[in-house]
Length: 108
Image 1: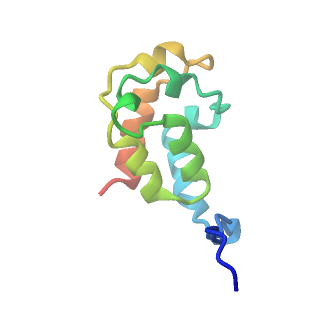
Image 2 (image 1 turned 135 degrees about the vertical axis):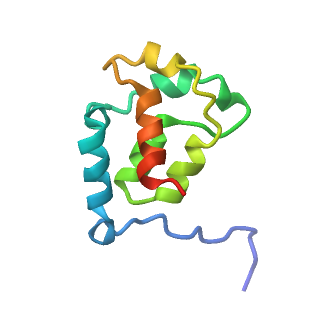
């Protein structure tokens, strides 16, 4: 067989039937603003820490909805709690309080 230097990428498919939705429901009960997020990316665009660390509140919320807790916590690890994301959020989500709530529910 000829080797062209390409390989098959592993599947990134998520089985949503096996995702624990109870923990996200608990987060939504504690912090209802998580349901208002429309994933516009304003928070990620204004983030100072994202220049140095892979930090994104938007991607963390989407990861939690998909049951990828470790990935979400890794995305929030570099947050400096400066509050820029709260100021630019078009929905007025208090992202600092949301991050603290995520760490309270999912954190170690």
